[in-house]
Length: 450
Ligand code: PLP
Image 1 (cartoon, rainbow, N blue to C red):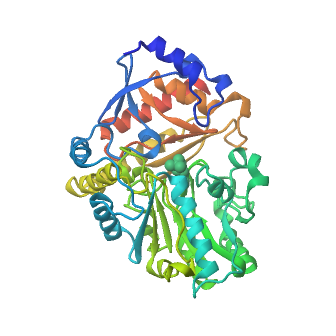
Image 2 (cartoon, rainbow, N blue to C red):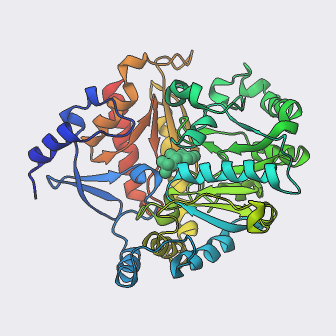
Image 3 (cartoon, rainbow, N blue to C red):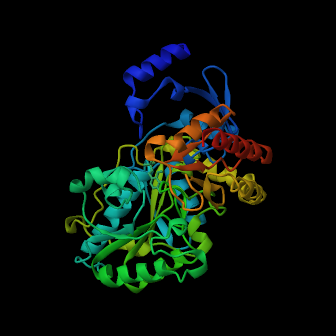
C-alpha cells in the first residue's frame, strides 16, 4: 500500500473533494481513513477517531458490522448486479416488502435509486407526472412548494426545491421556479418573535402560502421535524401535522424527505411517526443500507402508483431508472440492516443514550460562545455565536465551525460543521462512555478555538 505521504500527495494532485474549497484544502485536513470498527475510524497512521457524524449521517450501526458484512459477502457469492429494467432480483423484491412493513401505513410502492438526491428527484418527477396524467391529478399543478433553508440534494431538481443560498443560488437560472415557505427557525425567528410571545406565526404563514399557491402546486416537499443541512433546524411540535393537513385540504401531494432523519436518528425509526403523519411519498437513503452501499428508495402510496397504470401506448409509464437501481448487493445490505435493528432492539436501546446525550448537551450550553443547542434524538446542532446576548454570528472568514472540528481531531473525535453549527450525529450504536468522549472533545475544541 502507498504510504500516507504518497496518498496525501495523490489526494492533493488528483482528487476533487465534495463541498470543499480545494484552494484551502491543507495537509492539516488530509486525514486518510483506512479502516473502521464499531463506532471508530482508523487512519493510515493507525490513529483512532470516534465517528461523531456516523460518516455523514449514514453508518447507523457503526463500521464492520459482522452481520451486515456476512450478508453482503453471501450476496456476492450469488450475484453482485442485475438490472431491474425488465427483471426482478431476490434482495430488491424482499427489501420492498420489509420497507413497506415498517413505513407509515399506506406507503406501498418502492422505487429504488442510489442516493438521497435521486430519491428526491424521483419523488418530484412522480408527483409532477401524477398531476399531469392521473385521473385524480390536475395538469395545472406544476409548481413545487418547499422550505427556505431546505436541503434535498445536489441534482438539479433537488437543488430547485432546496433553499440554502450558499449551495443553490449560483444555479438559479437553471432551476424551475417554486414557492418557498419561511423556515420556523425559532432561535432566529424570522417573524421577530421570542419564545415568550410566540403565537406561531409560522403556522399561519405556511397556511397563507398554501391558500395562495395550493391550487397550482403539484407537491410540498419537506424534511420532517429537522432541516439537517440547514444546521439542524428543528420545527416546532405540530408543524408537520399542520403541513399534512394543509396539503390534504389543498389536494397537494406531500413528499417527506427522510433521507437524513430516517432510520432512527430522531429517536423513532421514521420522523413522520412522531406526528402520526403519512406522507404521499417518502424519500429514503443514507441509513437505509447502514452506510454499506449506495441505495435509496422513493416509496409512494397506492393512489399515486395507480395514476401511472394504463396501456403502453397511453404513455403513462414512469420513464425513469438508473443503471444501479435496486442493486442486489445494496439491497442485501439493507435487509441485513433492518434485521440488525430488530435483532438488537436498536431503537429501545437508543432511548437512554438520547437521554444521556441531552444531559451532556445541557452543560455545553453554558459555554460562552454556544448560542443554542438543538437536539432531536441523536441529531444535534451546536450553534456558535460571537455574542450570546445579541446572537451576533462570527464573521464567515473566521471559519469557526470548521476550526472546532479540526481541533476535535486532537481529542480523537471526527465531527463536521455546517457553517457555525457544529453537528453531532453519532451512530445509534454509540455507547454512553463514547457519548462522554464526544461531548468532552467537542467542549474542549470549542473552548480552544473560540
Ligand atoms: N435530502 C436530505 C434531507 C439530505 O440531508 C441529503 C444529504 O445530506 C440529501 C437529500 C441528499 O442525499 P445524497 O447526498 O445521498 O444525495
